[in-house]
Image 1: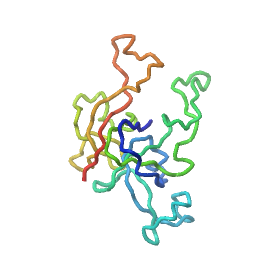
Image 2 (image 1 turned 90 degrees about the vertical axis):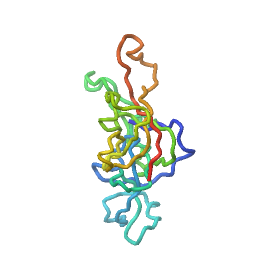
Image 3 (image 1 turned 60 degrees about the vertical axis):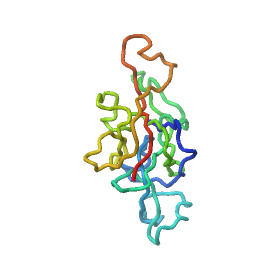
Image 4 (image 1 turned 135 degrees about the vertical axis):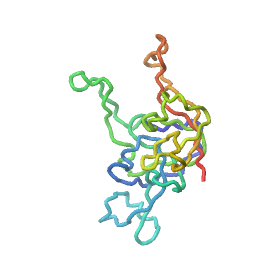
Length: 213
């Protein structure tokens, strides 16, 4: 859903062209995935990756240009948090609730991904406190995991960039430390825990981003 900036660094590192791969590209970003730099073929005519023309002003060598990809290697650096997506970013046109003759209760988001127009991804590299929505976390980084505790090291799943507490036998880069889970903070709709002895609904994992290496 979204990356939330709680006590981040002063400013993002910048906005960089997102890799257009269909399954792992920038339009699949929800916000909070761990990304890094990579290079691809630089020909704007034959290259399958599309980009704004100012991107081609850069230079790696005569055949390549820079893109941002979800982290895919243990040693890839720098490590950054992607700050683009759909839900929670304030650029959408709203959502339809009760669509398809009143049978859709969750709502359908109207509007494009925040990176659609520019093709660029905003990247945060500064150590600080961030919140990542649980849909952008691995299955083990959830409130149902009773083994999680404050201070546990978090890692990035290679290929997806999702946050996880599982190091996979030291094959994943360490990116920070877990703090806690929190709700979305909204009292507009009465939370279940205010009206009965029911479990809170958590929406975000709070962590200190400080990648090592």
